[in-house]
Length: 374
Image (cartoon, rainbow, N blue to C red):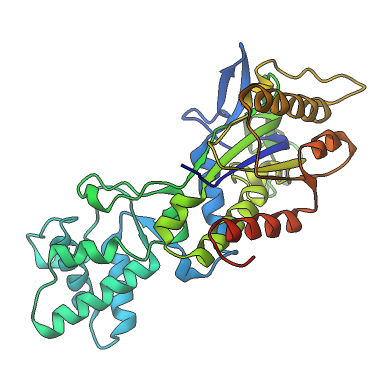
């Protein structure tokens, strides 16, 4: 069966930083190819992408993931009917989630406003709007909202972020949404050793010259790396969830932009680590996603003559051709945005364009694949 799959690959260099910490505060790492690599988890970068969506898509196209579902719905109910008290709106919100089976009835009326789900619940803003309208209609008609109606409302009009990254509700599996997008853990193309920054902070009010020493001392762990990043989007699955070709194209374009321009914010004020990728390669396929991380199973070793980026670009270009020749893979289309001559070898893999042009070109191909005019 023919598919439309978009693979996104990036080489992305970051300076000394701690983008994504483990439970001890150290930068996350992974062993790959027999050496330790810098790692940024898929969860960290997916959250950065979701936050970037806010500047790329309308609020009505997005959702919210929270345990405080009662608070979110109550606020919307109050917006629709300002005559209701905060307590009345909270009670209606609690009743809606109790009816839906995602919250337990409160033993005390005063606790209704504090209703929370047992886990993070991902709902689109339109779904919350629709629940608020239904809750008010049920209140005014005296007919309680039932579970079937609740399920119908939370299983339609999905947002772009829900369609992209999926939704899992353990207590109500029939409203789960399969993710149309997968994001790999970013890993460095080379071996890393974490380093420590010993810092001191001076107390500005210590004017007595006789009293020396810092007001605070400490250490921060960090590393620097050139990362290989990969994500894939199943356009057909995305279209099935969103139900609209125009919305699907907008979602793909927003994802590509957010993928390239977003950055996890761990220790951002300390390191000012925000950079843009050195190169982005997008390949549209009709077979299956292909992660090309195997290009870096042998770690890159920089030299004075050639740094990591140039060697990484050469390894990625060579491995891409080798894999596709071995398996008879031929992309439907391919585009490359690269910064300078160090990554110019990747231009042989597709049409070399500026990033804005790349996003538009992919969007046009998505529209064509879905039977819409480009």
